[in-house]
Image 1: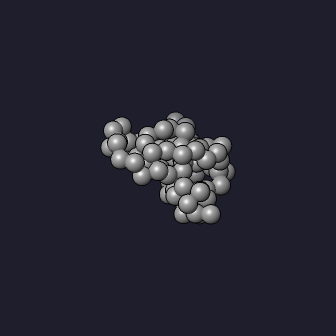
Image 2: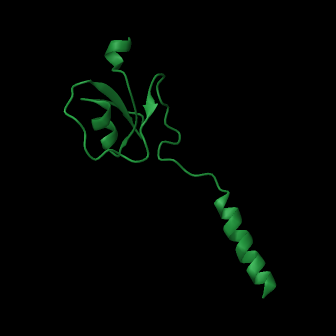
Length: 86
């Protein structure tokens, strides 16, 4: 019985040591971009401060503001518009 209890405890402890996977793993985030928070916004103001958002596939899309971009669960990071940084 002790062996089973020790084995079960060991399995639980070792599984807690695994590295967490992230939806954005492997996505190249452009310089100057910030990761979206884990807790996504539910309500955003209607301000117009355009930003680019990067999705999990690395595609850029323009959004009206960073809150609106990060409210989209596919967006992993936001940053300045590409057209203004070139």
